[in-house]
Image (cartoon, rainbow, N blue to C red; front, side, top):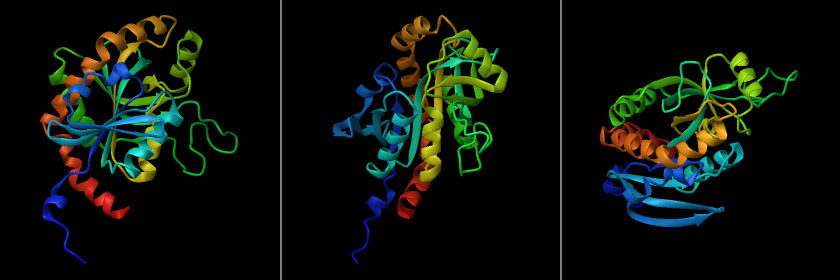
Length: 260
């Protein structure tokens, strides 16, 4: 067997950056060097380098199935060694306000309920409801957010996901009562976390708070996504990559790829 080139061994596995909506990702796309587009499975994968790191940027679409499928494609087809989901979310916890940033330390699907066969929120046959993010990655991303957006409040904790846009006050109140430690609610992160856990690939989830998951949510969400979310993503991800935070996954990503 011919020896493998040391240059190839030295190349880190790509970082994949995923968003549900175009406005959440659009400010990053012009920064992608050597960019090419690969169309596959009704998605446009933007492949190139971002701040010197091999990267794949893609819109997953909205919802848990879309997020899980996209995560799987990124790992299996594009060899992604690490995934970052970035976008907006509704604030749940009383301390979380519009304009804040939330970095997920763990994720849970709030609409998963196979009781009484399994405990509420537990993914059947897995024995787990919460999917944890590696602490070092959370800390690095939170630090990047604090430096990239001066004055922004950054929270680290539980983010919950479900196939429902939460805007009815009664539903938001029910989620707060059932999961009082939840900081924010969105529609993709926990599904991506489950897929990454199965695939053995590290992940992080970054959310800017666009609304308070209440009756004003549709208006607040639309305005925030258009005017703020993409800039937050560009500045925070840029700071994170320049600081070398994503680079800690390079060796792990290569090892994971070899194992697969």
